[in-house]
Length: 462
Ligand SMILES: Cc1cc2nc3c(=O)[nH]c(=O)nc-3n(C[C@H](O)[C@H](O)[C@H](O)COP(=O)(O)OP(=O)(O)OC[C@H]3O[C@@H](n4cnc5c(N)ncnc54)[C@H](O)[C@@H]3O)c2cc1C
Image (cartoon, rainbow, N blue to C red; front, side, top):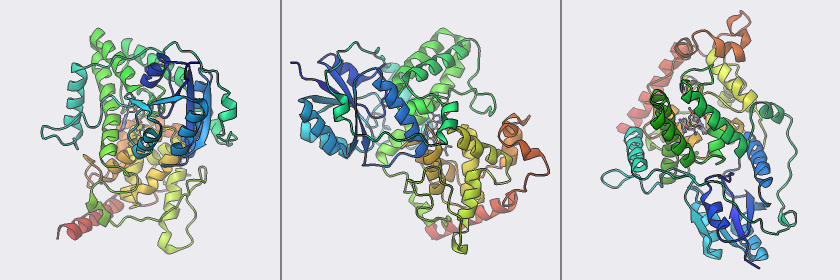
């Protein structure tokens, strides 16, 4: 009998343009494996919901073993039980875990999670880029030289394996709030492909890509699909660049969209070079910033638990954190974003920036509290993009918004939601007398934030 080949699926829950699957299909009967890993950062509640459904959709397309535990133990054990070879698509965190598995069983790994490898995109002096625009140009140049050629979903023989007998992942009950997630989201490769092609058709038919239009749904909505690898960035790049070549009028929109896809790439390259970005400031100077912070304010095992009420004046910021989480800050745009997040598992990028600025600057609360909340509630919560963007907002990251740039949420609302469509959708009472005043005064709190920044600078520059 031919040796079966195990394709260990991680953040690549797709059949189209899946290099590892393609490699396996050419060699022997295929069986998929997912591991609910007990190493690394535990997924937040919304992402866990997404992954579960995405795995279920893959299991309809090939035999899938769903295991749990430490992959260094689980993967070799299952490989030995089946006498199988193992292959996977490379990832850019938990690389020590993958190296240990490889050492034990000699697996093969393939590219495909990113457009380029982090060690490939470097400055003239051979160091990684820390600034986005030159990084983008370098990625673009590489891809023009060597464009991605996405692979079609392969024909393969399914391995004759009793997947149920080898599966031990818990079948978790759907939590009550997941109904609202289900109403707004459809995980899985088929939905990802459909959404992407609808987006391209819209551009082809003269539609715009605009990531500043809050109400109009003028972005792709692909982030959770890319997050879980239901679509490959190579496929997205190739199809969108082809559209831009063919339809001149669509080209500026197509390129504006691809530029955003390269932000994902940048976040991952930075994460690869600066691991543990979710807990440490990229710019060490910010270790001296006087953020309000309480370790484990929201235990990650508490699905969607708001911050505990503070009993102690020292942790008063936990009350403020809870107000922010619930969308009860008295700032219409912030409240709209936070309620959108709670209801749908998503939030518009610009509103993420404004809500993040309010938390970290006007309220002086550590970006890690915001990052943890997004980690738990976003369906696209990503190991690299989430901390990267939080540090961008807080000013502590590479190529970040300077700390002294404090978004004024009222001006942002006037500019990007001029007719109030977005705010009135999520905070219908915003324009009535029932709606409270902002929890802190906008101008005063901005001044306090700038003074705290000056204190940090004085402390670190003297
Ligand atoms: C505080 C904060 C936290 C964030 N956390 C995440 C996260 O956990 N996961 C995540 O995927 N995005 C995160 N983002 C980035 C961005 O908000 C989302 O990717 C975007 O809103 C998704 O909508 P879309 O798919 O319609 O994007 P589009 O505008 O259509 O962009 C296309 C794709 O490009 C990528 N992209 C766009 N903007 C960014 C960005 N700033 N950083 C990285 N990739 C980007 C996404 O994969 C997105 O699907 C965060 C942004 C902020 C300000």
